[in-house]
Length: 95
Length: 484
Image 1 (cartoon, one colour):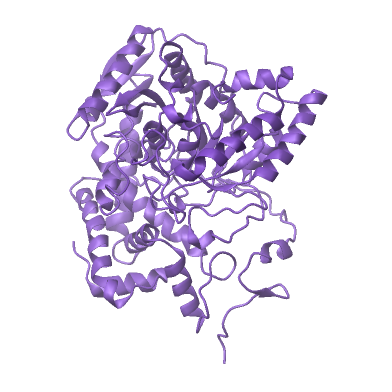
Image 2 (cartoon, one colour):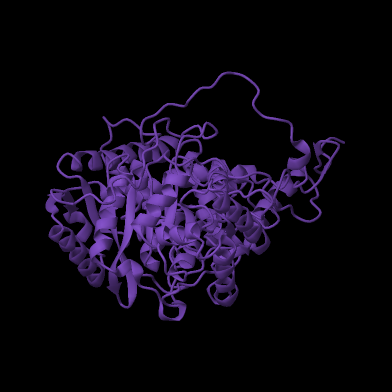
């Protein structure tokens, strides 16, 4: 299966990864090569096979609903590209 | 000093023949001398290492020291280390000073193991050659033209070159075992859930598993003892009593049933590698083991299944890198969408972007059933092959990789060919099984590993087999001439 410009633009939108106009063909080709690898799966009969999400078929562990985290926003925000007064700063969204 | 086993090193530290500061300084001196040519470390932490070594010496003096106290360690740069840059081999995290420690980093700190630094790796652990690192390729200590394997290539190289006595790695599709094979060292991927993933920068969460990378199986057993165990901060950490991974090391291999899948020795396997692996299995027979034929009929489905599931998980895991909370942010974003898109496009390397895009596509509307769900079903089929095979054998042996280390640049433009080279390691990750790579000989003057796969929770048995093999062979003691 071969991906074209439309699919690459759609994936770019889904992943928030920019693909420059002059790079679209190259990206489409490389992604198509990988997706071609998936074609091998089609012919396999999996009708009676359950999908496997966890190697040991374990279920997610639950814990009591109590607060365990301590407030360390100063430490965590010290590594943010831009933060002030316990907020992360981004370009203005609302005019 | 750097040719001692971990047990010998520990005995000498406890006997006061040298101090942890002297031992740590010895490794720091070797790093200063050799790492410029190997590029195996992203960050070296000499001040932290010496400070931790001084604390270890106090423990050794007051009698509170354990076997690993005072022995330095190198962490793969995927493990968060409080106050130390944790880049994951990416420009995205080039400025990321981790605000906390990964569980295993905490564990090894508690024991008193000085941190020498953070080792180089494929960006976000996505690769099999350590070439995709933002910090440049790591070289194989046996041949500077060759790759060390990946993604834990830096860790394998520092052990092979004697730039650390012990190293930590992670294995999502073979990233401990394949570099161990390429660099002539020992590496074990434990059962999924045996070692906490807390603080490991996530690639594909249902596969990621940390493990030791060392000279010998015995050294790995000691390090795994310190790394493994339940951690409530990892939702898939296994709640079961932690075994002593050194307990079975001395057991005889008499009566051990080794399954050898005919499928592993077919087309595509380098003849010299096949010879090394077969000779190693014959050595096991001399030790009392018996070979039986087993079959893994779905092995060829593993690579396509993995390359749907792992990128799908990655596309979700890596959505956290948005240029807002930490990591790289583009210059002068004109709006929020521009900030997201340019930060991610400029911060991620090509292979990482490719896997995120493939994963998002596989999960997208209209393709979920055909790709993601189908791949999850194949995952079960591949896993069940192993379960069936273990009905008639104790462990499975075969090659780790189809060839010895390939040349730098040889496969970097052909992703699919690179993916297919992981055909022996990936099925094990799909199953979540434990597996070991031990040095077994040389092909084309490069090291070759023997792959030993066991049932769930058989780590102690695998290390026992590796250790017994290393009692009668000396492949694990070989070091490249210039690093002796």
